[in-house]
Image 1 (cartoon, rainbow, N blue to C red):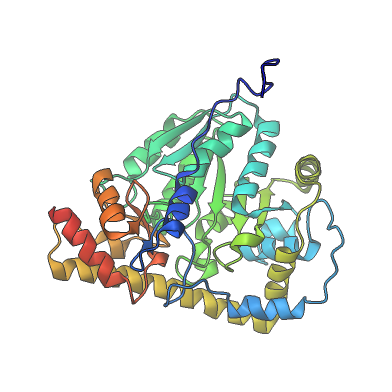
Image 2: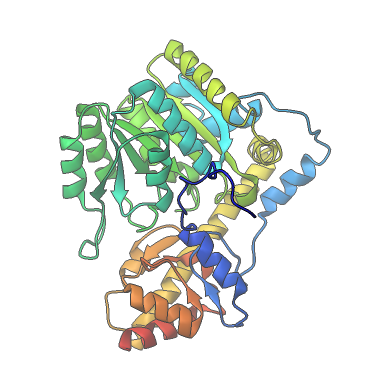
Length: 406
């Protein structure tokens, strides 16, 4: 093109692609038959293939004649009701007293963004958002995009087997009242270290004393232990035992394998039903200007699973299947490295929970595994355990051993 006026987009700088999605793109382009993707957190079956849950298959059959009309702005009513009862418990005082405001959201990320917008409206731009270090890579940019300042605190480190409670509690005690604390409800991403129930109670006490606002990222409920109620312990304890106002960002991507359907719930527990009504009206306004109303298909699937007693029982079995296979793959990787005598402390692989763990490899070792052995993982050596199966776990252990030994 010839010369002309300056571009309207001249001030836009290039943004590097998302590291995890770029890793998957590189993996997909790799023709080597040995390749293994340990980067993206999606569950695969024992043969390394995507798994459509039997419960989801049954639900899809049940809703196959559904229409394609718009949903209400806040989302499918039955989905919102059933998902709220699922995460807080049907007998929850917050549910019974109508103190939960909710809206359907675009999976966990969309729920976090809506929650951020809601809290920005409620608390203002000077409110600090605290996230763990390390944390899910999207947490910082979601809340910074809303306009919040974001601070990290040490959650776990290579020298800490488990949650660094000293750092955690110090951060809470030093935080200004009304600060927002982003908590991983279960299966901390990326470390796999979760607080024990006793540690959650200690965290909750300080959160209440300091008047902080807990926002739970609940992406892996049910996937951690195979028991949804058990995995929701922290949320329910904060709401029922501590009587705290909380936010919950719920996703069904992992727990029902609905990755591409983007099914989530953004929920806020308030002290009164009057406050809840106001919050829900604000959520409706946020959804209206952002997506007008949410997609229907995935929400109908979730509602069908949760509403039907037989399908819901099947889903409970599916959660056990997924969590058990992930736990078995953790053990197999540990056993493989242990039998090889691979230098390092690998016991934490079996002690951590959920889809992910951090192996403690250097960036150079991660790059070597990718270039020489076609094993793809995040630069931090975060590994998606769900990417392992019976056919590749020994290969992965052998390659890690070879790489570490140089």
